[in-house]
Every structure is written in C-alpha cells, then in structure tokens.
Length: 80
Image (cartoon, rainbow, N blue to C red; front, top):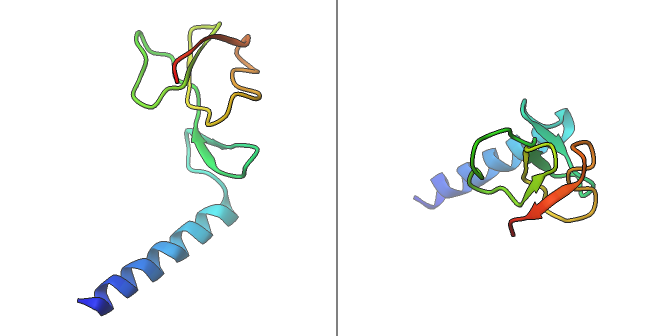
C-alpha cells in the first residue's frame, strides 16, 4: 500500500512537471505566478470558482486582483 502511494505521488509529480514545461491545457492561461488558471467564461450566472464579473459580461477565475479582466474592460464586480 505504501509503495502504491509513493508511485502515485511520483507520477503526479512528473505530470505536474511536464505540464509546467509544456504550458497550460486548452482553456487555461499561465498567470503572473506561473500557475494555470481557467480563462474567463461567458455564462448567464457566475460559474463555480469565478472570482469576478468583467465589464464585458464574462466571469474571471483570477487568483489575485491585479490585472483581472484587463482584456475584458476591467472588473464590474468582485465575487470573492
């Protein structure tokens, strides 16, 4: 059982390393901290995990306030 956890942790570490080298998956962008964050989404109501509503009506998943909605007209409302 302990070997299984060790192997799982090792493989997860390799996957995270490869993702950091190759970039973010489709639908995500790399933020100023180097982390992959979901791109803004256009929906009728705030999706789970959204942190701000942009002035163009999209919802941001930004992890910090600086630069949030910068390509979407700025922040209309903070949700966090």
